Amino acid sequence: MESVRPRYSRIMTTTPQSTSTPKKDSVLIVDDDAFMLKVLYRVLQKDYTLYQASSAEEAIEVLRGRHVKAILCDHLLPGQNGLDFLITLRQRNKQIKTVLFSAALETEQFIKAINHGEVFRFIKKPASPDDIAGVVHDAVRQYDIEDLQQQLLIDQKDIDKQIYSTAAPYWLYRLRVIAQQSFRYGAPLFGNVLALLLALGVIALSIGICIMLIIYFVKSYLGIDIFSQSHLLPH
Image (cartoon, rainbow, N blue to C red; front, side, top):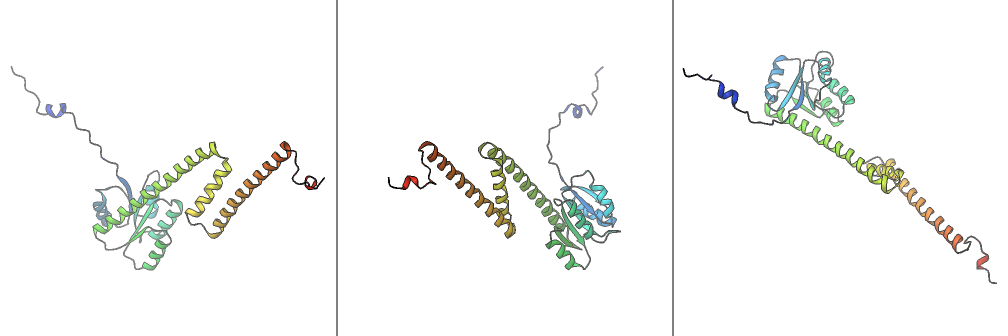
């Protein structure tokens, strides 16, 4: 009697091809309108791992233990409004990028918050799906850029520290870092003057050490006291 193979045997024995899908960036959506949450979810679900919240308090709970790069938040929320929530969040986490999404007419207040760096962008309701997706994309991209810059800065500090620990005293390394950061990031005039004075102090100290070494050499090996006038008088 001929045996009959199960119809699914081919599927079971086939080795699936390994496909590596890149990990999606995480974005939090905050809105008390359930319908708007669904709309925003449909717009962004293809490109991001999305979390949802209907209030500022709920958003704080969602953020616990999660690595979120950007937040799209409505302004009119129950309890704490969206702008105040984003400003408070900015004080706790300066790295995360925040986007305010609102139909309110407080545009001057929103623009002021953006200019002071408290909010990354503002979207006026109603907005097209392309506009929403574009702003969220810019927010995540800016997060990645700043994160990369921070990592490069840390790596550069580690490299400089390793080099200066073997080739120069550590205090000279610290002086170089202070002066470099002062001029690189446009510190106030006081910072620039302080860095310049420190650099001049190091130069003066180095010159003083060289002079002392020359005096010691002349006095010890040549037997001449350059501070005495006796060797200049005629005999």
